[in-house]
Length: 333
Image (cartoon, rainbow, N blue to C red; front, side, top):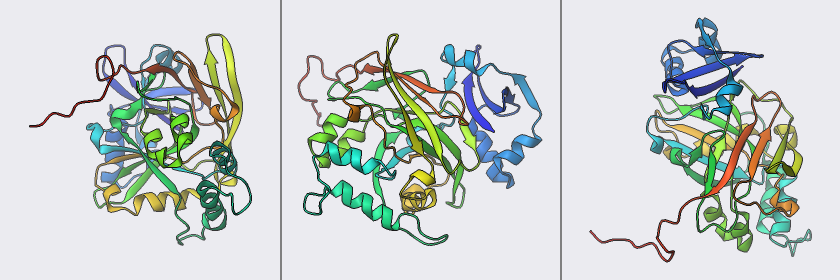
């Protein structure tokens, strides 16, 4: 079962549920957030609630996508209360990609911190149920203002050195009234990053992640498959510049989803009632690692069978906040 959010042609919003090929509006709710809060208030799962709601009008999601009317599958009334975060070095091929970016070797003396952390995950990232495993690499990407809708532009800052895709699976969560995190499900994500900045020095990783991102168009309710295989493409006009499979799911990861969730939500900051969290679980496939340098106008397309429509976004460059360039001035009050 898949959930999405759209803007109707009259400008109002709707939640859409899809089971198979048929998509219908969810009667009585105009946001996924309101639906999730309704479920928490009544002690129901999303699947239970949707099973009891009379389907509304039929929706052509592909048409809505072509018209730019699909929203991210969840947002928050106040974007500052939506956190976008992620974990890296979590997939079985991710360390070699990162290690090569930073010029590390495979021997102990030449091993980068990335490879050391990856090996920690291999050893202790999948603890027994109820146990705590090793903590992963973690990063902050932004709040709800940093999320681009499906089919919308991914704006790269004027100062960025690169803008490259990272095809991933994201977990979507709401925090209940008592501070309990509740997982709504999973979605395809593009954890868009600046790989040239990151490659300059690993300590620039935090800077490289403060970029826009996208997820959706649809939210898959329930647990994900143990092995997930999708495709990541970069298109320039009619030319396909990059087309490669990517793997996710716990069979292809060095950490379990439960362990990654624990090490995010163990912080009280991330258990504030009513907040929304979008947490990206990492990847091992990058067009940057294959030598591609993206340009404005390039289109990123990420598709995963069973997760709904493909996620597409076009790369664009944001205006420089300082006319003519130069340093941003901070005013005194």
